[in-house]
Structures are given as structure tokens and as C-alpha cells.
Length: 124
Image 1 (cartoon, rainbow, N blue to C red):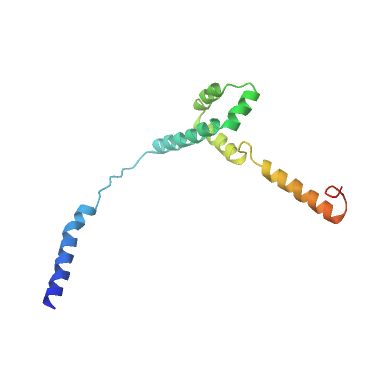
Image 2 (image 1 turned 180 degrees about the horizontal axis):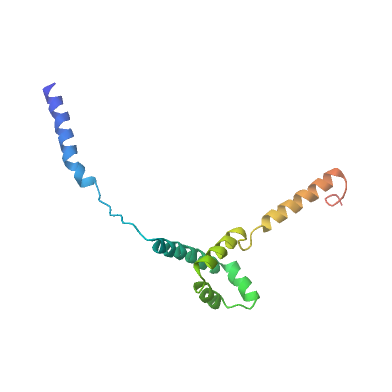
């Protein structure tokens, strides 16, 4: 019994001695509003630049006669407020979205019209 008690006490003591080794110290400081806005606008700029590099966007820009490099330079020159507006629009209207949904809805409408007897597409 004493041996078991000694083991538990020894294990607890070793655990307590190793506890400071496992803790990490972190340093935090207060940042200004300008620094916070700069970090946020940097993240937004990265998101917009990533969107501009997508293949569908590059193809659309080329079809409109816009060089993707020129578009990237113009995006880099935008103010933080303009970047925020552009990021919101990007999230609302992603490039190439909705094609599968439109095809699915069209198929469902044709299927419903076929079942109700309004059209006769599938039985020729």
C-alpha cells in the first residue's frame, strides 16, 4: 500500500515540476484603429486578388478586352471603402455560379409539364 502511495505522490510531483515546461507565454498589445483597418483591408485585398486570378474571371476580363494585370493594378489602387464594396459584390455574384441550378430547374419544369400532359417531349 505504501508503495502505491509513493508512486502516486511521485507521479504527481513529476507532473507539477513539468507543468511550467508545457506553458507558453504570449504577448499581446493594443493596436490602433488605423492598424486594424490596414490589416482588414489587406485581407480584403487578398480576397479580391484571389477572385481576380480565377480562370472564369480571367476569361471574362479577356472577353471584355481588359488585361488581368491592369485590373490587378487598379484593384491595388482602390481605397479601403471601395475594396469593401467590391468584396461584398464578389460574395453576392461569384463568377460562373448558378449554371447547374438553372439547368436543374429547367429540367424540373419540363418534367412537371410532361407529367401534367401540357407538353409531350419525352414520348416521341
